Amino acid sequence: MMPLVAPEHGHRYSYRTHVWVTAAIAGMAGMLFGYDTGMISGAQLFIEQDFHVSASGIGLVVSAVTFGALVGALLSGWLTSRVSRRGIVKLSAVVFIVGAVLAAVAPSVGVLIVARLVIGLAIGFSSTVVPLYIAEIVPVRSRGSMVALFQLAITAGILLAYLVNAVFAHSGEWRAVFALATVPALMLLVGMLLVPMSPRWLVMRGSVDEARTVLDEVRDPDDPATEEELQQIVAAVEEDRRRPRQSLAQALTSPLARTILMVGIGLGIFQQITGINTIIYYAPTILKEAGFGTSSATLTTAGIGTLNFLATVVALMVVDRVGRRTILLAGMSGMALTMAVLSITFAIDDFSGAGRWVAVASLFGFITCFAISWGWGFWVLAAEIYPLFIRGQAISIGNTIQWGANFLISLLFPILLASWGGAPVFGMLALFGVAALVFTYRLVPETSGKALEQIEAEWRRRAGVTDADPPLPAPPAPLASA
Ligand code: BGC
Image 1 (tube, rainbow, N blue to C red):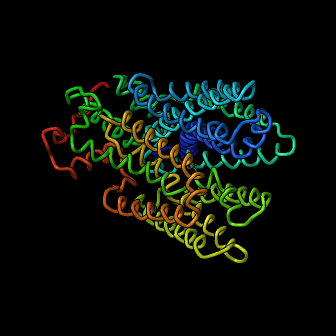
Image 2: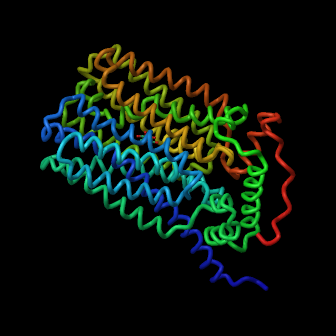
Image 3: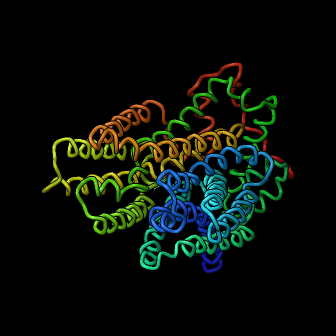
């Protein structure tokens, strides 16, 4: 019998909406990430006045979040094999709320630093698990854009923070800026109570029926591809079980696991050391070095926040249409080039005339190139490249090192800028960009349009078969009642 058009459309609408709602709610975590990292650039001025803190004290207030995130990302590795992805995101929402409230009422700078560490912890949890959760719950064809939503949420959070900073700039109410972060944190908590668990997590826990129920909710239940996807997940989990249990250290004795982890770690390091957060955290400082006054530097920073957000919107539209490798290579070429131009401008210009506009154009160019490529690219690939047997822990290691690189760059940049000057510092960042290009060209695989299990199978093929990495078994017969 011919299916009726209307109910079919109605149905389709509802499960598509479900996937979007899932991703949008999880994206709230990205918003908190962006807000909490972006807000400090404005709030630090008033914190300095209220608590009479030294420059190094402010440095601690700023970097406490990245350090907390590093610890959070590390702990998530341990948590992902014990708690559901959804459970960890809920936990991070609660930790966000605790951190924001503590910061808003902090009676001393010491308490404020602790509060920032707590907020960082929540960012570390959520930035590790949210992309993983989204990648595991959405269909292959939209996985890239869905995980990239996380990046969009980060940039929206940064932009919101810059705007809130501007609104509170006159009153200096930095406590309110912190307190406002509780709103999206509460929304995240409530939202996570409504969304389903990751089907891959459910299969890993042996609940295949529940996984099918979730897939039927978030996919077209009448499409045979939905059952196929479940079978692929079951096959990957069974394959994982057949392997002798091993710790991550043991898993890393396998050349395959080492190569994949190296690629993940490299992506995180290169996303950071090529300079993004020298701009996100320190744009006003760079612009003042290039001869701008404080207010035009702040205004231009708001422009950078807006551009970062808008370019990410554009990226989101093309993510699943262009190959990941191509876009990473193109974006990094632009990033290295704009950093090189910035370096040359600092070397040959005294910023009395057009040079300062070349500097602004370089910063804007860099942000655009980053936003369309490595901004979302790191999070998407980190959620895609790891085989199931190391996925949770490997994402956690990759993210911990990414946060470590973020921490180091944000700590060292102002010191190096003051002692070396702009030309060598930006020149060094441009060279890191060239290294990132070579790395991407040689090692990063194309993952676009492939199921997570297929990516895993391709890694195995690429590495060749070794004792430590047995060949993939023949596809299993469908589970009768599972
Ligand atoms: C990076 C952050 C950065 C942000 C800027 C993210 O992908 O991980 O370190 O601040 O993009 O948009």
